[in-house]
Length: 220
Ligand code: GDP
Image (tube, rainbow, N blue to C red; front, side, top):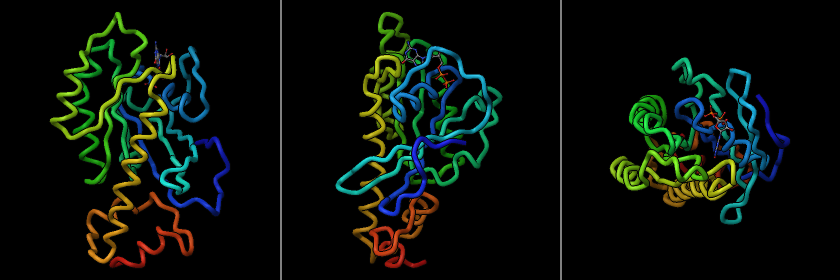
């Protein structure tokens, strides 16, 4: 496992885990490399094993550390473990817009995700490789329709040309933040089922922080 930045920062308000899933070769690792290090490599990756990268950003004046997990090849053997999904506040379902099959498989990935992840997980559908427009095999309309039906956010990206990558990650993290802070605001409601699940494993509890108040304010 690796992180792109130091793990200890006493000022961090939230840590959100986001998992990348989808068929092999759709560009998950390159999306992660682009977002976390602003890099793109044409070489295929060699290693198998779960890996994550982190990036710290500011959302609504809060310091949010995104912890983005990449299957790093596990999906080739349909062996993505339940530990991979544990504590995820968000998921990016990635397909290659030049490969229809990778889009058709989104149904399976979504099923797998919903079977393993939390009910309140925020999901974004990503059509990657939009730089290869002439080879498009998935009309944006099909993807939009699927996203609407399944209640997912949707965006087309290019890790190669850096199109929409930052926007996509920023959007999903902002939606996670909104979802968590909405529950924090309605703290007295004790909506533990949905609240705890997003908080569990995804937040660092800083003394006096919003996270800590939320936790204390609810029924734990
Ligand atoms: P993963 O198996 O889903 O992690 O896919 P990779 O990130 O390893 O990418 C698979 C292949 O697609 C590699 O050859 C990448 O260089 C290429 N690739 C990834 N993203 C893009 C993109 O946005 N545009 C293009 N043209 N190629 C890409």
